[in-house]
Length: 270
Image (cartoon, rainbow, N blue to C red; front, side, top):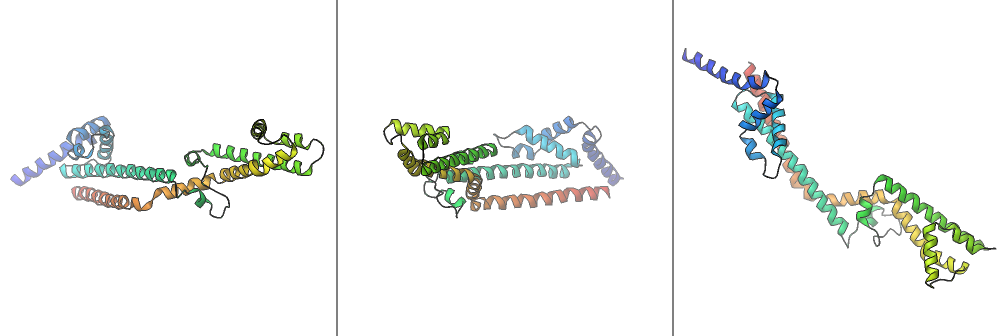
């Protein structure tokens, strides 16, 4: 008789935990229950983390698994705790990658730019704004490539006009340059660095303008490769090894905890 009464009391306790969550279908009630009674919940969330976000996570897991009894409830809280810690792993991974990228971008001795295209001649790190290249959008890259190709083509056209010579070759070559290059040439003339002649313009193109145009075209064309190379070096996989091991540990713990919940439910259902 006493054993029967104990079984009935135990069943009543289990039912008391299930009914507020299972029968009402009220998510806010589940959320309140998760926040009020969680033991692990109060220890899992750090002071600078969002308690509400964790409470919502726990409430969703309670709604999904509908724990019956303190043991199942503890295991569901454990699931929430594991997911929360995996979130921290991702944050730590992102922070480590950002630190690695910053280190690579600021390196004065081992720039990723030449390594981005190992068989490309003349690709130098000097004068390149690596942070600017890394943050360039696809649209910005396309515009830089278009502008650099146009500038190089115009410069070579001007050089060809000067080589051919003839009447008004200087004026024709000057007009063939894009506006920025033309303005730059005029500044050199005003400062007395070159004479405003076909010979002076030809020398300016050969020694100054064309090498810069070639470099700018090369750099613009290789921005995607530079971005990939920098990201690859910035990952610094050796720094992520401990995080990866910890994440694997959490994955296994999650699997074991979930298996225990399912096993308990199976035992309860008979």
